[in-house]
Structures are given as structure tokens and as C-alpha cells.
Length: 193
Figure 1 (cartoon, rainbow, N blue to C red):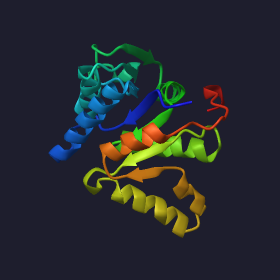
Figure 2: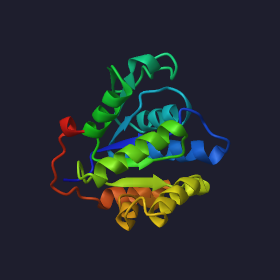
Figure 3: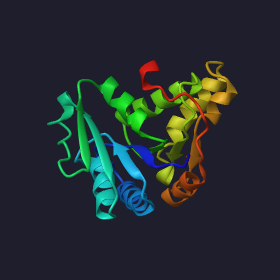
Figure 4: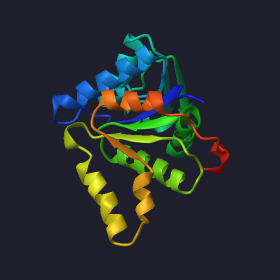
């Protein structure tokens, strides 16, 4: 089965460098042009809003998923194709997982780190085998990748943990990899998470 829907984890802020917003805009445009549905956190701010707007501008479909308590804080995006309001962060992440065939990590902060580590952990536990791509725009992910390598070096994770994800340098490479990815037949039962 080919990749039809991509969950993008990214910041609810723009970050300190214009290249971050440029990457989010490019990601959205390319997803829309490729006919891949964007699944994201439902906000209308920061890189989240940028990737959603760009996908819509390119004629793509966007599924937003936002918990009730963040509706006002992240300024819920009213213009997406479909928007689901959940009762918690955990149910938000479960629904995003269930709707996505692959995961793309763009620059972001604590929430992005949380989503990334959790989806990697679920893959390590064999709850899914969906691909995870970390787009290392301008080296933003280097410290996170260093932390993951340190976990292996210090004996807190097997070296195979570094095979749970793929680091790509830019959006163009990400799209090439998404086009090449075919999902393995595994149990994708969100109720197990």
C-alpha cells in the first residue's frame, strides 16, 4: 500500500530562522501536489499553520486533530478539510497515528519532541511499522539525534533504535522517500496504543 496520508509533527511557533517556515511551506505544497493528505495538530499558528495553509493552497486535503484545551491556545484552524476535537493529548496522538501512513518531523519544540519520541517508541514496541522521517532542516535536529545516539552509547537503548527513523536533509528528499515507501503488512490497531 502506498503512502496516502502523512502526519507532520512541527512547531506551533515559527522558530528563529526563516528557513524553518520555508521548509514547512514547501512540505505543505509538495504534499498537496502529490495528492497526499496532511494529518497534523489542527492549529492555525506557527509552522503547523504554515504547513496546513500550504497544503490547502496546493489543492490538498488536510485533517486537523486538536484537543479541546488547545482550541483557543493554538487558534484552531477553521479552514482545513476536516477538523476533529479530542478530549486529550493522548487521544489526539492516537487519532493522528491511526490516520497516517507515515510520519514527518519538521522543526519544533517540546511538543514535536514528545510526538517524535512516542511514535518511535510505538515502532520499537512493534505497534506499527510506519516510516518516520526527521527532516534535519539547517541542522535543527542535531541535538535530538545526539541525545538518541547517547542513549545507545550509554546502554539505554539497542543500536537498532537508530533504525526506527530516517534522517533526511530536506523536503525534496523527504518526498522522494515518501514516494518510494511501501508499508509492510502489520497490525495498525490504535486500540493497542
